[in-house]
Image 1 (cartoon, rainbow, N blue to C red):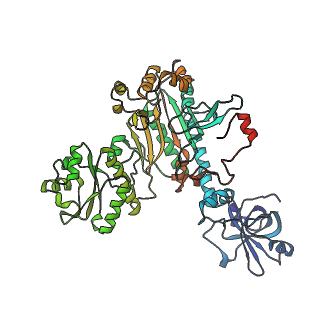
Image 2 (tube, rainbow, N blue to C red):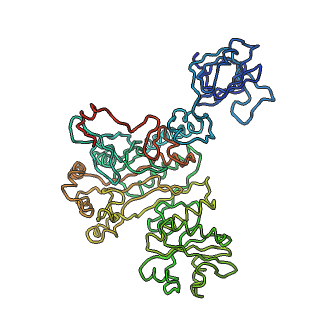
Length: 584
């Protein structure tokens, strides 16, 4: 029996029509005289009724049904009796009186029940992912993901972008994370790499004159995983010619506005606010600040140049940083609760956490006894203190002070429930440092990638003061997660050579890794720049998921295993011999 309708579309307007449905047995109930079955397909659920007085043969066959059997049924649509109407579900006012039943396939008892509120070990869910995906909640997330794909393409085509596929087998050009390598059978001892991003190819497309390119593309990085990372992930990749930062930020912002409006009916206010990297780090302790709540960090060095508290005085003398956050009503926390916060700060890397309670216009507790009148007055003014505030202060070297307070800020917001989970707060982070010093490699490395352009006025610093140079880079942050990042690229050969010198990449190494791009830059490369959105992370946030694994059809575990198909797996000796590979 070929289906004529989907389960989710049947309503009172179909009453007395005879229809054919196909799907899975969601639930089976014998009410002594009548058998009820909830039939499920991806469009919804509808109730079937098997009545021996209506069709005894079909009724007898229905007794063999069990959960997850695949069946086809033919029957008449009926209005439910008033006492059995379920107004809480679509189609809860109708049922199908079945006249014919075909069991298309039987099913073993599933290792877990196919329900949305599923309290099952994730490893078991991933092992039987094809069953897990029968759950409505996961299907809805993948359907939203599909809708996002369509809206992206619709918007970018209207903006004159050309969708172009780039190679999946490419040259290994490490950009920070490890490459996944693919051995070549035709060229023993040589390897392709799976792309960490289409970076070099999209620059070549700009040199080719395509002007505006995009691609929804798989990328691969062999790195340690966490809840919002996978070894293979999807990017919305874009590149534009004859543009500056404002142009890229504008089109990316409007794309986000389009997606949120059309998919979730959420109005993203444009223009999206911007914040420099330095402001983000010093005010929120992160280059991806969560702006859905307060707890802004305040710098306090100027208040304590001659503090009686030795830690503060020594920090200022050593050129370190004193900074703090204010927890409203925090003075009412018990000493045990404050000790827990102090221990958490130490977990984040702090050597200690100073605190002060502000109550009845005075300070108490913690380091209050070390404060003089001037320090108290300036602290009140700087932090805009009100009654029952709790002040938490870290004093350490510059980076650690803000990093600890940034992590403490997120911890407090979580445990004290300060975050509005229905809020979507965007911010563009700009003016990143171009380079950062790697202690492991004892050299400067590119913060983004070696093709990111420095600000023109900062080129002079690449030779002698590379740490001062700022990049023409930009990240889009949503609710504390980076969802997109990009930059204006270097398009002049001379600038690219200076960048490689600053990174201590010798000419021979540069030629070996990036020779094809360097040659292309010599043939009239236009000014260009681009951006890439992390699609998995964007869908995760839009669907309120806890992990990107919930918005990827067949994800890996946190240790990069595919439990369903048992990969990675061993291969035969014949395969290894053909590739000239020996396992040691």
